[in-house]
Image: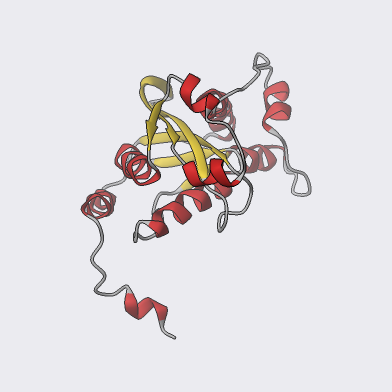
Amino acid sequence: MLDWLKNINKEYPDFWKTYLAKFEHKSKRYVVFSTETSGLNPDKDVILSIGSFAIVNNKIHIGDSFESILLQYKYFHDNGLSNEFILESKMKKLSEPEAIHAFIDYIGNAVLIGHHVDFDVDMINSALMRLDCGRLKNEALDIDVMYRKLIDVNDKQFSLDELSEIFKLPKSYRKSPSEEAYTIALLFLKLKNRLGIK
């Protein structure tokens, strides 16, 4: 029936209320992020890890970052995967609720930047729904869309490797969302400059 009626007096978790309050002011901070997921269906798949960096005044702030492995035991068990990479990783390991809570605290009202960012946002939104929260309110920019706007092309998408090659970034053998986020951050700064975004 009228689903939106259920949410009118809904009691959200405290961290979500704090997040929503941050949108009274516009942010000058960008957060570049990337997720590693168990698949491509936000309704069925889960986030396995997140990596992100902040950009302020056209500078990547390595110290202003968020990185976590999400302990999705059910997914690993259901898919017969080993926990080796979790044990070997030096990244912070959090349950999905803890990681999403921490990530929401970290991004605040920043503008989100990603490569095919709609998918990453959908994955975060699915995790938020499991926590009885709403959807992300952040503005999001996609470096693929920015590049296509720059060259006036609508009928082709560009992979991160293709964009890295076009902008002559050193070839990296990305192994984590943080390494991917750093590459996206470098590309965003180049595209932002060329497109004249303040």
